[in-house]
Image 1: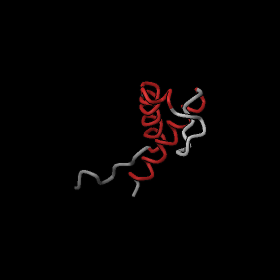
Image 2: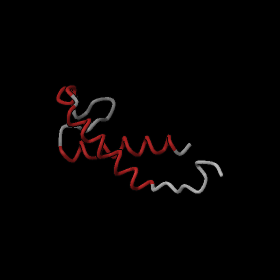
Image 3: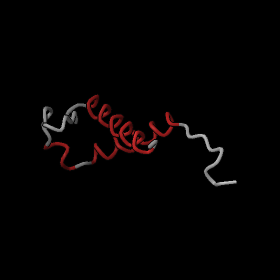
Image 4: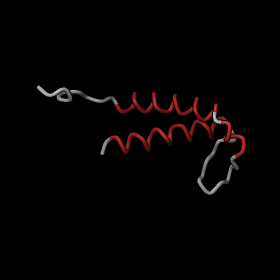
Length: 68
């Protein structure tokens, strides 16, 4: 039997874990304070809610790539 056979990935759990790690990375990022709320990249790091949204957005993007 292959090592990857019959392994069910809990994507919601993974999403939570990735977002949690990204939120810490966003918080600790020295460049965070430099970014404008309306930057061309669309970052929303200036508020707690914005940082949380960005962490989830990063998690969703990573999961999308991992599922390919």
